[in-house]
Length: 182
Length: 165
Image 1: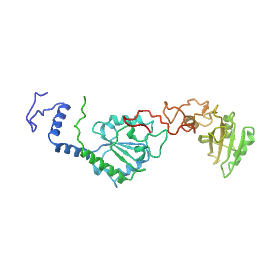
Image 2: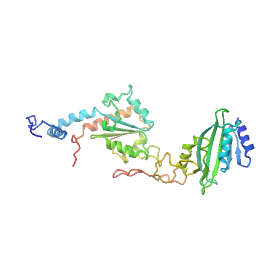
Image 3: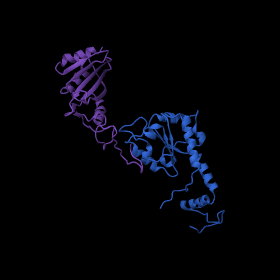
Image 4: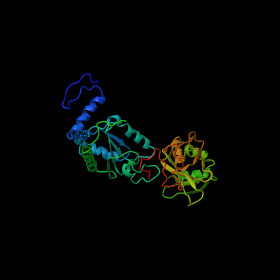
């Protein structure tokens, strides 16, 4: 490292051959100019790759939102990915039981940063009317949640509203490109 | 229609049927548990009853309402005769045991496991009586009326600052 080098707009080495070096360059660019962070956030908020964790009837409304009438692809959330490794938006759609809680937790842990979580419907948000031995009383007891959608099930308009709220949240974020590992 | 089936059951096993009723097509017989497999085999194989299908097997907890505490309920259906019959077996709290009818109807397998899982009733003769809906480390049987409705048995701890309500 550092043997091949050239001047650039930061006045530093850019001949990066490793992920760390490349990230370091862009991270410095980010630190130098707030506008660059805005551009990165703009890119993130218009390209959500969701992981639909669909467990219950809310899935029907999720599909309705994905369909041509409401079409969340307009917001860049085009492709559901069925591997958590390829997703950055976890949508928990439906009732989560205690039996299933470790699975949800594992899926969330498998997703790479940056990642966000939408709690879709009252069951995911609070347990809904399932106040019993079987149901997790809100997924925020086991994973952090960015946006909650009320409704049983929510209307597609509410889902789009939540998506736009998340976009606003992402636009305002100030976070490093990669999580700092110590 | 199925009054005939009920009559046939009473005629064949008069000492086993402790009570029965039939109103608006809900023919029901409360039978003793000891010869259950024999009764069920008869109901399945006799040409006049022909209950080929066990549509449902469930239980009721009558805690504080009547004795004995538990009832196991069998819903039978005849595909060829298009009639139905309900069998009930009363179980005391101390020995909640009933013979498994798995040898008569294979559909009883998972339904007996479900009743065991949620009510803790024992099906004697079942080859693999373990929980089917809840996780193995779950303690107790949640559909019993004396199970605390607010009791939670989470498999993973809550995040810091949160509790499993």
